[in-house]
Length: 265
Length: 229
Image 1 (cartoon, rainbow over the protein chains, first blue to last red):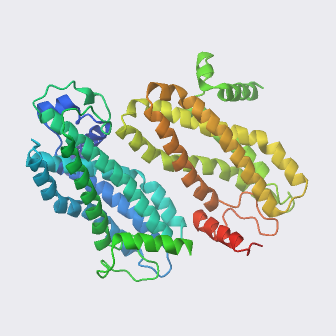
Image 2: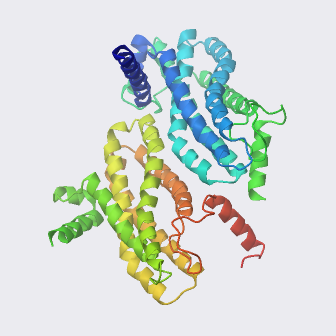
């Protein structure tokens, strides 16, 4: 008994420690330019991933709650499905976009290693999912007291878009700082005290490098959105029975337009 | 005797500005601010709930409304704070967050104080016998006025923070948007606050689980199409 208790306690401490790591990431402690120069992005992708999965699942519950309160809809199974699918969307998007980021990154003359790119992507997922989960209570509240399916779809799209914007901003800023840190130029380490999203003077990074990263960010956003569409339903149409997946049809952007149209008609 | 005087002093300090209150040693603690929100909120809620009169089981409406106004404010606050905290952290404002939280709580307390000060107007309006719909609109207007007043408090409390770091200016906008978005729906779910005299006294309406934004869109559509009653 005492052994199992000890084990549980140890695990809990560990988990708290992992969330502490996520917290330090959010405050920008890992992304100061001089620290990046010394040690690189010093996060553990595995530990951070555990936090991401937990936070993603908690958002999945908030999202899936909508179907629990419908009379005919998919019911509680949708909550389970959404719990599984939210982290899945992020990691599948990561797998799809990682190679291209790495290749373009190397192509435009950046010095960040493959492991560095993986860490960077997991870190920005961490930021993305934390913002998402922090909006979870609001989404859960609306899920519980809304009967309009199009409204819930649009609200969730908006929440994902906001969280995604933060994640991408972090990605872009950190990539930029990592390039500054890896470069041979002695920089006045302006990014040491700033939050993780604040811009750092960037005279040393050529504009075509930034253009490539911007284009890549658009690709990342598009893939993420469409990945969400392929893995749908997340919210659960109240007029349809539960299904893990829907047929392949249409695309994310048409569906958002359709939802807008339904809300106003 | 000391309690009401102390309460009045603290309220006065809150209205005149937190900075001044800190200087004069009359700044309220977070708990005191929460108590003020509960007290003044209940006061306005109680007045709000008297629309149907006080005969029969009507005093219950008064009680329900009194309980619901502080719940409305506190729950909206509790739901908006987590994401606001994360966004503040990401923008490098974590160290200022205790002061931010204090500014936000002061604003909420200010909102309820303003509401309470408007309560005689509401009672007077009720006494002149308006129809139910008009009473609702009047209360809506009172909340709007109180929100505008609270905005002034919020801006004043945020002043030093903004001077320290301009990012706070944006955070202020983020907070207002977030708070109003959640608050409108929260108010909708927690209705009735005024209590229709022809409907039974209830804590919640049976049909309260719906969406305010969806309802307003439909209502606007009806008005535009000339189908309003």
